Amino acid sequence: MNNIILHELAFQNDVRPSPFCWRVRLALEHKGLDYSTLPAAFTAIPKVAGGGHKTVPILEHGDGALADSWAIANYLEDTYPDRPSLFGDGGAQGPGWTYALALHTWIQPAVHFPALKVVVLDIYDRIQPQDRAHFLDTREKRFGMSIEAFCAGDLNEKVAAVRKALEPVRAVAKERPFLSGAAPLYADYIVAGFFFWCRAVSLAQVLAPDDPLTPWFERILARFPRIAQESTRTWQGP
Image: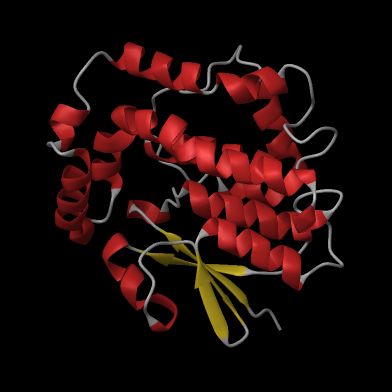
């Protein structure tokens, strides 16, 4: 009986946008584990899995539940050591773990934050109506200004800034099939989650067709057909 449940953020039309949830989905697929997913609106998250959590993903397993994508990845690695490692040789003691932690620490301030200038108004349009007041209040406090002011500026320039921020991983993608080498590991899933997020909430083309990261992302999709199919549940425009 399947006892792994992944609680995910859900927008209108059951679009699942969270980059952190996609990381965990890829980790579960990598481990070959059976799991199910449940949607949650922003304002419903504090009541999920018995309460006490502020963010998704939330993983329920057995009698327990834990949040935070990095904590969940380490939990899966420790709980299922007989399944393919998320971090490669050495597992949580090896260099792949250090590489993944570096990307986990880097990507949110370096890439997610400038990408918000591209997509945050789209996010506001896609979230569930009951979440809009909460979203405005929390994001405008975080930005120190209205979301309209935060997003002001030329779209092409903002997209260019995101593409420039991705240069460290682009440099690796030019040299290797995956960021982790011959096969993908959790470091790849951290970056892939970002692209799932962007295409779920906006039509802005953050990933250009001629970008070396494009064939890398296509290889991720080919490696995980279930993820490729599920991730097509994205916003397609009016």
